[in-house]
Image 1 (cartoon, rainbow, N blue to C red):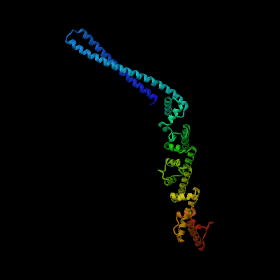
Image 2 (image 1 turned 120 degrees about the vertical axis):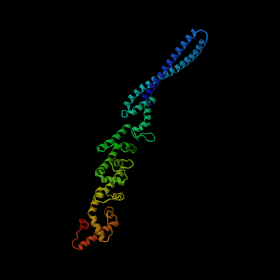
Image 3 (image 1 turned 45 degrees about the vertical axis):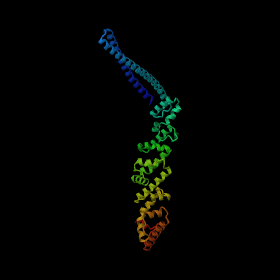
Amino acid sequence: MSYREELAAARAAQAAARGGYQATKVALRVATEEYESLAAAFEATPAGPERRQLRLELREARLAMRHATAAAAVEEERFLQLREDTQNARGRFREYKDYRKRAQLRVPWLPRRLVNLYANLWVTYGDSDDAIGALRQSAEYETYFPGNRRENGSLRMSEIDYLGTVAGYQDTLAGFGINNKWLKSRIPELIEGGVSVNEFGARVAAMDDRILAQGDELRRIYSRYFGLDGMSDAALLAAAIDPTIRTGLLNRQITIAEIGGEALESGFRLGEQMSTRLFQAGIDRTRADELFTQADLMLGGITAAARRQNEGTFGIRRFIKAEGLGDASATRQLQRTLTGEASRFTEQGFGEVDEFGRDMSLIRR
């Protein structure tokens, strides 16, 4: 309970006690008047049945007056105690207000609720350092600085640095025109993961430039490859800033998705496994664009030629293995197909090959 609340409660209790005390004083006055009235009547009544009856009523009135006196004494003592408690609470509240002013000057960056709590604790402990230590261990602190307190009670950063870091996250998203409503729930894991504003900015920039700005197909591929819940900005950015994923791994994932995107743009659908194999072979987005553009131009003719040369099936996977992964078996199959077709067309008198010895008719097809 805050000192303001304590004072309000003390005033309410005092007001209730005042009402009870006044009621017992009225009851005592009535009982006294009744007793005095009966006593006067008793003195004026001669001996006889009526006087004996008045004696009995007088005894009851005396007993009622004693009870009223005792009740009034109890209520008076209670009222006086509560009045003293109210005065003490008022004194503590005044002291608290003084400490609150000092607290506002000492920690002006804290939210108002924490400043009030800090002032309360300062009054309680009588020492500002003890008060700030208790504040940092409170449940209210975790509400305003989630993720900043380690399990052993120490802090990951000062409150000023914390607020600056969160502001940096928000400014970064605003700079990219990205709604930051989803960020609040992610702040604890970012702070706990030690993600700096610079690293956060680099991650967001990579995701924004290479995925978000590239259209729905690439979003869909990234989400499918890495098991995200949807392909919204929030889902993709949450994956980008996940502190359990190192920046290098994030760039790796984006490149793998870009490879899949380049394949899809040329009409080929790759799974994550094949895109990953291409990445591991040193293929980046630019090289993937060249590879799948080449496949789009040549694969139809090569597939038909492979059938004519009895070289079996030669689809996109074999092409990737030959031209992207350097697979020996696929490369030999491609070379045999191209060489056989070149020989066949040369024998017919209209063969034409490029500087790599490849049949240009296959490309034109």
